[in-house]
Structures are given as structure tokens and as C-alpha cells.
Length: 611
Image 1 (cartoon, rainbow, N blue to C red):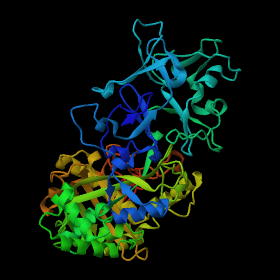
Image 2: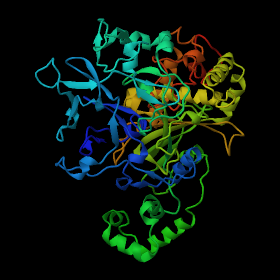
Image 3: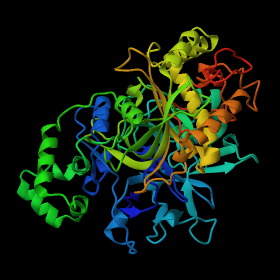
Image 4: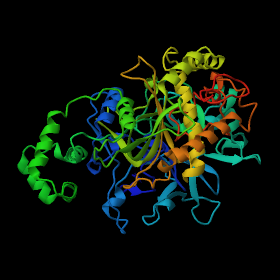
């Protein structure tokens, strides 16, 4: 990461590649030891330092959401590091800016905007984590004390974010004085936001932060100015009222992303190599250019060692002839087929899957298991939301990544790993659906789903994932918690992909779950998860997971829980003691879950699938 003060960009910290998509993408706030910074829009990224990633299925899916003007998927900007912090690599990274722009002196508790001239940026090339602002003329300390970010910002449901209105708030409806000098102090002992007093030292006006939260905020917080700090725009029309948000709160940024599994390219290993290096090979007009590149480019030399240039050129021409073919909007269908049938001898560095028999004792319920020894997951950031996480069908609330709103590229991250694919018996699922549809649980869940969407201005008649999705989703979470105990990875490191499609909704119905773990390392993970998919291991794990699902330590409160759209809970019998998992693991924000779909509970009987 780099920020641009007065004399050029400086490095202020580091994040992991996957965090740039899932946690700290464009428009998010990164809380560093002494600074708070916001990741800038795609307009500010240096694409000359970003490699193009070839993943046609993901590119088609992104175009479906953002438009056909998206030309490429690009990796994050990076350069090989050296021991010299003044080399070019130290100025390559994600562009960030200081936000919030109000900082508090740790000695005198005065509030200053960054542009006031009272603060000085102290950078440290060897220790970026020590980069900080200091109050140069503080009368409470012998040395300039550090200034830390103000604890609050303001935002709205349309994705706008702004500095907290400190000056207006301190004067509490009274006319602002000519030269306001603000100070914030704790007036209580509990460390709560309501214990903060904001005071103007010039005119002695004051107000407590208690008025910025709860019902009182409706009379004190101003209207939204429509600001997007990551784009540097002054304002845009917005009719919402600003809400007070705590710096570092999880509701400041929710990513909107798409991901696919990299599937083998037919025709052998050479076609796969051409596909993987298509960004460089696509630009070669004649074979002589290829021959020259193979003699000078070390990356291509290593990749195509042992292959004849004539054969490589033939493969390039064959791919170029079909490069414009669309893959359609069905992302999960091809993955379902690949996971069901396995690799079938197709050589690929990105995908290796081995179908095996389901564990004994689950005949008639499970149709098979696939051990995914090798996976590559490519995830693209398409936008983000604030205050609340996005849902399918509410793309209008997604904040754009760059000024024009029609990006020509989006950032992606590649992770490699392993997984277990569990496929349910389709006949058993359809028989269960026929009895589950009119159950009181699903009647309440469908009603809550409609109320939840209607309250957010969305079409209440779309977006319902279906009863089989609730079943698959609940099984997925139960297995994630059980696998985490045995495989050595934390539950937050295990992610899910739910393959749910009812008859008539596509080429074929789907009912399966892929549980996988991945990392950005070249070699991926170490096999601790995939080995638990073997029948002798998976059978007892499934049995234990179902036994745990039958009785929660929070019962009967958990079992009696009903979906309630007022507090955002679109789940039934599920809590942090049984089915809820980390947000990084779940596809749907811990919604559409209920243990009663798996086994009998106190509240619902005769609904369980594994009866």
C-alpha cells in the first residue's frame, strides 16, 4: 500500500493478497497502527504493474454484472522486493489516501483536519508501520505527540462515506463561530461513545456523542452530501440522512465479488499452457514473434520448455479462432460437471479431482464424494456496499470502483488449495422438497425473505434460494465446524460453494456442496482437508456433525428461533454455538440456515433429511 503526501508516494503498510478482495478492497478503510487509510478507486491503480489473468468464465460473469466494456481481469500490482526500501518496489502497491481526514492529538485531545497545517506526516521507509501524523505545536507535550484518527465517520445506505460533522455537531444547532477549535474528551469511565464530549474552545459550545446515535440522531445528523472518498468526488445527489459509524466497524464495507474454479482446458497440456499465458500470446501476430519471445522471455521459456514452436503456434491459432466464444452466465454448471466426473486424465495444474464412493451408512442420501486434490479459485472484486451486505438482485446499491462507473478491468486474486465435494442423491432431495415446502418453518422463512427484501426496496418476489438450498447450506455449515476440529485449519479458513438448482431451472438439477481451503501460495495447501473426504474418515465426521446439530448448547432458545426480518435474521434454528460460521466462509452472510432440515430438533420434527 502507498499513500501520496507532499513529495510522492510512500509505503505505509502491507496486507495479504486475498484481503485486497475480501476485506480491504477499493473503498474500504484499513486501520493501520498509527493511520487509517482508504483504498483508492481503479482510476488511480498502475495497470502497468498488473498482470492480466486469463479466466474466461469469470470474465463473462463479470461482464454480465458490470457490462461488456470490461476487457480484462488483472492481478494486484506488485514488484519483487529487495532489501533496499528506496527501490521501485516500495512505491508499487494499492493507492491509499488518509481517511478520516480529522485526527485527534493524543496529548491535548484537540481535533484537527489533515489540511489544517497543524499536523506533520512522519514517514519511516524501514518501518512503514511507524508512519504517523504528529501535532507540531502541542502545548501539552515537550515533543510533538502522535495524532490518531478520529473514532467516528458518517455514511449512508447508498454507499456514501464522509467525515463526521465535528464542527456542526459541537455547536449543536448554534451558529458556528468564526474560528472553531475543537476538543474531544471522555466524560465517563465506560469507554462508550456516549461518554465523549465535543467542545469548541473558541466559543465554549459543546455536545455529547450520545446525540449522534439512536433516536436523537434523526434531529442532529445532517443529510448526506453524496461523497465517495475513494473516487475523490466532491458530491452527488443523495436523499439519505447520514448515520454515525464507528471507525473499524464491520459494516463500513461489504465486498461484492464473483469467483470461479479454474477448470481444465481440453486438448492436452499444451492447450492448457497456451490458455494460462494467453495474455502474452494473444498479442503475437505471426509465428516469428513467438519464436523471438521464446528465446528472450524467461517466463515463456520455462513454461513451454520441451514444446515445439510449431505446435505452440498451432495451439495459439486454434484458441484465437475460438477466443470470442461466450461461456454464458451459468458459472456453477460447468463446475458441477467437472466435480462430478473428475479430472478424467486431463492434465491441468489448476484442477485435479477424484470421484469416490460415498461413506457407508449414508446410502440413499449421498450420491457420491469427490476429492479435489488441486483447486484454483479466482475471485474478482466487482463493487461494494456499506451499512448492509448486498444480496442478489440489489445491484443498484453496489458502489462503483472507478469514477465513470464502467470499468475496463477489475482486480482479481488467485488462491490455490484443496477441497471435498459432497453430492446428495437427487431423488432423495426431490422427495424431501415435496414434504418440506408446506412446513411451517419454510412458510415463515419465505415470508421473512419477502419482508426483508421489501424493507430494502427490492423485489420481494425474487431471490428466494429454495428449500434445497437451506438444506445444503445447513449441511455445509455443520460440516465446516466438524472438519475444522480434525483437519488443522480453523473454520474461518474453510469456505463453501453451494451447488443448488431445482429441476427445470437449468440443464440439470444440482444438489451438492464443495468445502475447500485455499491460499495465495504457488503450492496451495498441504492436504489436511482433502484426506478427510475418504469414506473411512468422512463417515464418522458426518455422523458427528449430525449428532451435534441435533442438540445445541443454546437450546431451546436456538431451536425455537424464528426468522425475523426486523433484525435481519433470515435463519431459523442456527446460532454461533451450532451453525453460524465466519463471514469469510459463508456465501450468504449466515442466512437461510436451520438445523431442523438435517435432524430433529425441539421445535421441528419430521423435517429432517437424514432421518
